[in-house]
Length: 628
Image 1 (spheres, rainbow, N blue to C red):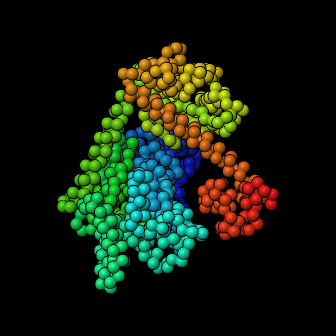
Image 2 (cartoon, one colour):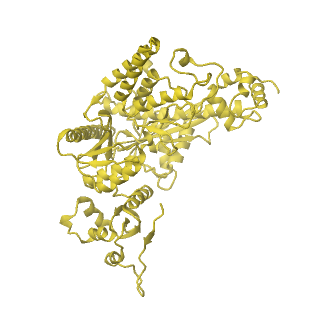
Image 3 (tube, rainbow, N blue to C red):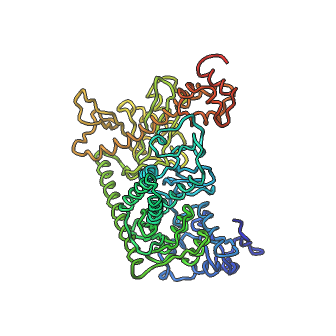
């Protein structure tokens, strides 16, 4: 959104320095808008909104320190300058604030992690025969999205239920692709097979509507509707249809038995509560649909200097930006900041009235207390996990004789086959937890044969060769582990010595146990020590290192397979005249393998989307080895 105007304070005439805060505050308008607080380096450290910019900014500098909340007290100490952006309304200020927070990611704003890592179900109603697909990043493309779900397992369980009860199209392609014969789903009566037969779109649309009701938590309404249809079929002596509807009702009732009824008024609600410790805060979300608890989500907030009201407001705004399915009511354990403004924004997003309410008694109060109790339990579990990891890493520090606490551990592993497609994977663990955003993979460029030492040397040079040994977004580790034992360890030490990084962090090597020699455990080697470290009394520490090693191995092997698969596909299809990326994608999506494409008749190939008979003949000839 483009702001109406932006207040930038010019230097006073005849002066060489910028005006102080008091001068800038005096010139700030009493209008709604957004303000950006900056530190001495000019970096934006906080973005806020206000109905009256002058009053809000004055409050930062005029309140007594004893009356300031913790966040404001810390923030004011770092403010060196500010800017303001005037907007036409508070709602515009809310939207602009959100955009600026995404752009600058300020230190003192509450920022949720991107929801793209959580799976959702997508249904495109613009298709003739819509189906459900699993996506990680919802888009504003006009399709319906259900979720996000807490795990991939929850999505699979939901899809399994839908595919068992409803005859929705099961194939993953967004559009129906013609087939010469239907798949097994049609044979067992689980799909109408629109890929092979004419299916009445009105009949299919009824199935889509039922699936939507199920995913929206309206299962009781759906059961009542199907019961009425079952009675109607029985009255007309269509007993086969009545039996099918009876089985569908039974399956839905079994699903409903597993759900927990938490209200009696059957209203859709989201329930939020905050629980905090000195180090972190947890926001718990209960999703109640049609009176039933449909699921729970928790959000970890590491910024704990903000008040609960600000944390709740920030979570509500960011959550519904990513998940625009707004319920009729949003209940909170404590009132969020700018509650009425958020309620108006949610109502506009929903297209109907939405309220934000903090109940004090009754059934709704019991709901928010349930959310608060779950938040406390989640916070306690996180604290116990962190304490356990801290004890484990502290013991590992002593066991390995490290000079520093191994908060950040990196591990490198190579992968290749007969000297081809040589690659390496690097994984990062922080506080005993994978940091997948910092994972790296490398294509080995300077090694022409299967030489693990040369590969390790190249990877470590590329990882640590800058002046400080720090890649973009990659600081130095506290502990580097290389897979391969003494030889790889010596290569790592030589590379770090050559780069001037010796002694900057710990280095160890890990090698698999030799069962033929009766070795009881994997071996951990330290620099300058001939024998491996004995972990027989400290198996938890060894298991952590093994887990990190296995993750690095998985990363390297999966990248190697991807490279090898890409090379084999290129040799098979990309050398055929007339077959570009689009046609190749259509072929692979439809048949799944080069062997299946080669076995397909020319007429069938020519019938695919975007294909011609000439191209089909080229494919047939190219894959069979005959000249066209």
